[in-house]
Image (cartoon, rainbow, N blue to C red):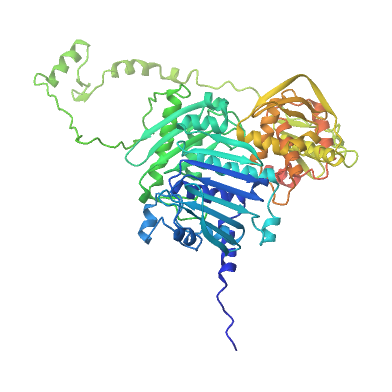
Length: 631
């Protein structure tokens, strides 16, 4: 029998490996921008078309490459960042594996122009699907210019699963934010379909945050700065009153690299405990600096999961630094008199500073037997004699306690509970017929209870139905919006006084990408200058008192909603708008409003789940209720 195991061709192996490194256009942007940073660039321009599906062009003024290095850069596991395995434990660069360019070249049409400052001419390389088409000298600027065209042209299955342009643009913007925030001294520009999205000049950390997320963020920022022997923690957190409904503005960076760390995230949320409004999340932009040998970034291809050698020591430092910063801004008490649970943060010692020993002071004139004179003056002695003439110890309060014992019965007076007589049990006045609907699907007229202004309880034949009122409202609105989108004819209710809204560059680009679909839903929104829009009308099917707030919530929900890869853009917009427009928890509903909510819910095609797949209702069976009382 002949051998059947063979080595795959390099082109096929590269396509397979590319699936781990390059998932979408945003992955290309991330890898190439990080390479530009490692090359010492101070200016980086990202130009994309069709959310990166057609073109991703990234140019920088970094060190550039020689002709040999330019060709070698496209070989798998070819890198200038490390030389041995020991270097993996002291990485200070953004990249180090040497996989990105080989992966990109395997699934796209790539053009590279690069030139070192000392060279007279640069190098041009053209690669399609891992096959080098051209390599020749060329005139170009100092630095490097990559043009990535037709991403996934030879992997149609992967290209088919790319999402709508608005979603892919959203992911590109996230990657730019993760690079821009820890590198405020770098000039960054992002252009999409010829329109500028970001134009970020060099700045300090606070100014960079405001440039990225908008001027409204500036008023909510609280400075954090804690330097210890283990880790340095600095950056900004948001005031509790500006907490958001979504997790969009939460960033951790370690040594300039973005990371996700649920354990450290919990340190922050616990520091904000009892300070946030319900169902809100704090904003934070925290930077950690520590010895590169104390972390391991070689965990995941995206390098966003990082292991820490001493994360249990870092956790309380982060928690305490947040509490201290909140205390300095009078958000929490800055003085804690209960020190039993305080955290001892190690502080780096200054050069020449040793350990100070406490000075012991002795009073040679102190005589402990002088206290007997004080006892005698007060009418008692430390050693009294009982009736048998034997000495016994006495305390200053023993004489008073002896007097009180004469009326020991009084100790129990006032401690007796005045219990009200238990009311006699009587049968409920609710008749059995009231427990069930007179006809299937009819819920109006039933006995309905609203619990904690969050749940609606109503009896059904099998037991007790519990409905989440907010999720139920989301489902109703979602199906209403989807019906509207199918007809493409929605009445818009014009505002008496149009409202203007100013957005940050990322939200502005996102709104432009979904503006056409919003118009079909009944919104009348027009551009009104750079990153500014005017709201002239809202959907007639909604009773919107604050269009500006609804639009902001819509964008937040749209950015963070976990949508299935096959979902259409209109479905995502309808789901986001439904979630933004639905009633909040804590809304007190009248009986007719509850009846209307339940009837509309069970008129939906899918009443059991909200648009994002969360459970809307549950039924507690009669058997379970009876079992709970039989114990």
